[in-house]
Length: 125
Image (cartoon, rainbow, N blue to C red; front, side, top):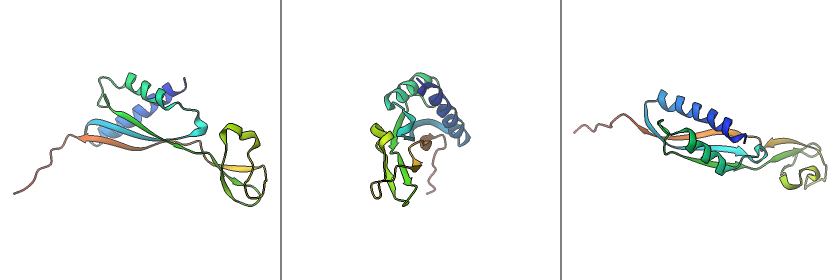
C-alpha cells in the first residue's frame, strides 16, 4: 500500500516539470525502482490511473525498470548481485566474505517524461 503516497509524489513532480516546459500532455513516465523498495509495478500503474484523470497526465503510462540489489565486498571490493530471496546468507562470490556495502537496489528515480508539446513547429519555406 506504500505505492499510493509515493505515486502521488511522483505525479506532483511530473506535473510540475511538464507544466514548466509548457507540455500539452504527458504520455509516459519512466521510473527506475530498486528491488529492495518492495514495489509492485502493477500497483504503481493502477494508482497512477486513479490519480491522473482530469490532469495533463490522464491516459499516460508508467514504465518501470527494476534495479537489482548489488553490494561491494568489504574485504576484496568485488561488486556482486545480492540474492534478495536469501539476503541473510548473501556472501561475496569471490572470497566468501559475508559483509558488503549496498550499492544499488534502493533507487526510486524519475528518469524520463515523454510529453506532447503545446508549441507548434513552424517550418519556414
